Length: 124
Image 1 (spheres, rainbow, N blue to C red):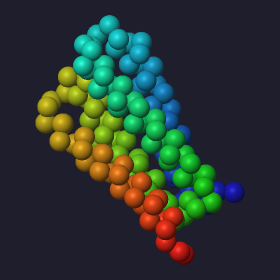
Image 2 (cartoon, rainbow, N blue to C red):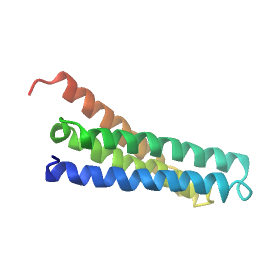
Image 3 (cartoon, one colour):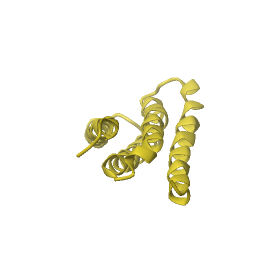
Image 4 (tube, helix red, strand yellow):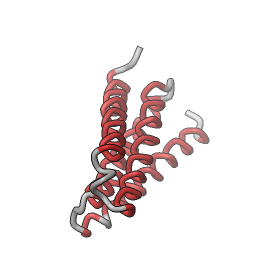
C-alpha cells in the first residue's frame, strides 16, 4: 500500500509519463514535416530525457525506499519541466533566452541521481 507521500510521486510519474508519450508521438507525426532536422533533434533529446526520468520517477514512487528518495523524485520532475520543457519550446522556435534554463534542468537530473547515490551509501 502506498503512503500519501508516495502517491504524489506516483501521480507525477503517471502524468509525466503520459505527457512524454504524447509529446513523442506529436513530434514523430505532427512536427516531422514542419521542423528542420536540428529542431527535430532537439525535440527528440527532450523526449528521451523526459521518458527516462518519468520512468525513474515511477521506480522511486513504487520503491520500498520511496520515503527516503522523495527528494530525488521531485528533482526528476523539476528536471523534466526545466530541461525537456525548455528544449520543447526551443525546438518550436521559442526565444533563445530559454537556452540557459536547459542546464538548470540537467542539474536537477544530476542532483536527483546523486540523491539516490547518497541514499544507497548512507545507513539509516
